[in-house]
Structure formats: structure tokens, C-alpha cells
Image 1 (cartoon, helix red, strand yellow):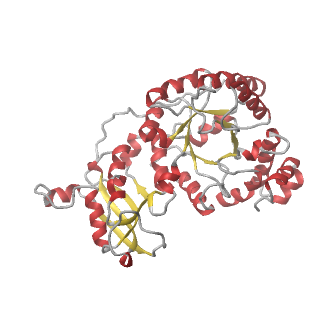
Image 2 (tube, helix red, strand yellow; image 1 turned 45 degrees about the vertical axis):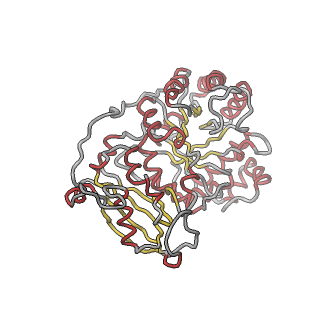
Image 3 (cartoon, one colour; image 1 turned 180 degrees about the horizontal axis):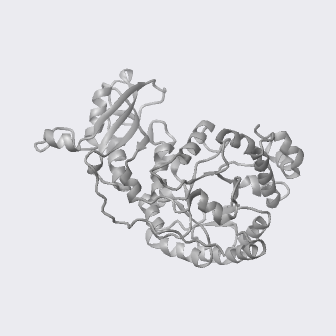
Length: 436
């Protein structure tokens, strides 16, 4: 019933010429007991032409053409956190700085895997650094030419779910594990009847023997097709097809052949190259889950910031990207979450806008605060427990979410929404006071 065709992406191995003046700018926050200028040189050398000693063929000409160069260096206050294990130097002399390095694009070309080797390879292991975090990336045009990015994004997703305006409301199947395919189909039918826009598998639900992907697809899609025949709108179900790379295409085809309009992949589990592999073959939106992201970002001393990482995920081709939500159950502050949402909404090399996906502890009582803070409804807001845990059932949970968001979009107060929405009032009885 739904047209899922899209333009074919750039060929996977297209040869793209790069100008000798094109560079990637990588921004880091570092701590070190060395002089800051010396630490910057060590990092630049390790990630380009250098080793621990200058070698015979590391000529001035080679350095001029291929060495990473220090673009800027700004000292910052120390945060008070402990140094990374194995770091060397006098702790009393430790200093912190924001460092920008300029990498010649000719060192690696517009290739996401090889870009990561340059800007985030061995540098995390340099013992002279007591902390090292990649906080941003500025990428030149050839990356946008090589990688087509999202095929559907905001506009395509809205079209497929028949929601031309307003926040898109979705949920995660709960319990995450344990429902039979038939039980899953019952839950999906209830959610569809309640007017849900989007449903997704949990990241824990892949292709397990207890509820294989094929069985879930066969159980769920007839329910959605019948709903679409009755109403003209088909909720989007993101089947988790995360698997070994040689199974991704087969899993995708299984979903599409049954009429599915979305597939989900865990970005960090299949890698950016795996996402790009899927993007070149997919004819439906790719829902990008960030499972394991905390392992590379939670520490302020090490890893990637979301702002840097999300650019790579978007280039690889995800149409939806998890950002977390305010008042969440995980470690990120509201300020960090709002920066993540803003980062995903920023333009990137002329590509189709990716949909920010809000999740983790979301419920109707966060609608007004979220809308006020983000100023947009181009969001996919997922409430798992916030819908399934509603005291009057999941259908009432959907109603509470829809009515609270509609109220926020009209510029009303939380009290206005409570006065007109019984489902919202009932949600407050379980989840507590809403955020104003």
C-alpha cells in the first residue's frame, strides 16, 4: 500500500578526487602533563606521519604534505576527574586544552572507516595524554559526495506514517523479550488502533530462536496491512535486523517483501561500514539505534562526543537516530540531550535531515518541556513504559502522548492539557508530576 521506492545512492566504490587543499578538522579535549604545544605535536604526529623517533624518510616535504597540523590550541579549566590509567607525567603539572588538528584529506580520502583510523585510532592509547576525547568533526564536501546519507529522513518518514505535521509518536515493544509472535501481533493491533505512528523492536530482540525475525514479520505485517486497508495509514514497524553482515541484506529483504516500511540496525554493533552497506541496499528507512554508545561517550576523559559521532552515523545513512530524551533514565543531562537533538537537526553536507529519536524514560508529562526546549515537532518520540505502563493500558498511553504533544504544539500549558485529557491525568497518577 505504501510506496517505499527511493533514488539509488552513489556507487559504493565511486572514485572521488580530492583537492590537495581539502582537510578534515578534528576537535579534541585533552589533558596532559606535557607542555600543551608539545602534547599537540605528539598527537598530530602519531595520527599522521610520525612515530616515537624521526625516521630517515620522514622528510620535511613528507611532513609538509601529509602531517596533521595544529589548527588551534585553547587552554581549559581542569574538570577534577582522575587521569586515564597508564598516563605518565607529574599530576601537579596536568593541564587541559581544546585542540583542533587539520588532517589532509589525501591521507585517507572520503572513507568513514579510514577517517576513524586517522582521527580516532591509536590516539586514545598515547600515554602522554591523561584524557583525550573527540568532540567534533568538520568534514569537507567529498564525504557528502561519497556517502548519500539518509534516503528518507524527516519528510520521507512523515510520508510513510501519514503524519504530515506534529510530533511522531512511537513506542518500543515491551516486554523487550518474551512475547511470542502471536502475542506481539496482539500488542501491535492494539497500538495501531490507538493511532500510534511508529513501533520498534527492542535492541535486545534480534533473530532469536524464541521469536525469530521471520516469525515476527509474518505475525505483525498482516495486522498492519489490515489496519492500513481500514484507515489508509500504516504505522511504521522497525524490525531489528541487526546481525552478521552477510545476513543484513537477507533480513532487509524479508521485511520489505512482507510490506514492511522500516528496518532497525544497531549502529555500533554492525559498524559504520555495515550501516553504509545496508544503506546502499535498503528501499525503506533505516532506524539507527545507538546501543553501546555509552561505552564510547560516557566518560568525559575518553571517547567520542555525540556531536562528533552523529555526523558519522548520518553520513553512513541512518534516517532516524537515537538522541535520548530529557529527564531520561540514563546518565545524560538535559543539556547534553538537547545539544544532541540540536546536533542531529543541523545541516550536514547538503543531505536529507535525519529524524532525532527521543527515548529512555519518556512519557506524556515531558511533552511540554521538550517542545519548549527544542522548538520543533520534527521528532520521533518513543515511550516504552510511558505507553505500556499506563494504568488504563497501552491504547490510553498512546492517547496521553498524542494529546499532551498536541497541547504543547498549540502553545497551551501543562494545566490546559490536564484539564482536557483524561488519559494524561491518569498517566500523572503513575508517573508523577509532569515537567512544566
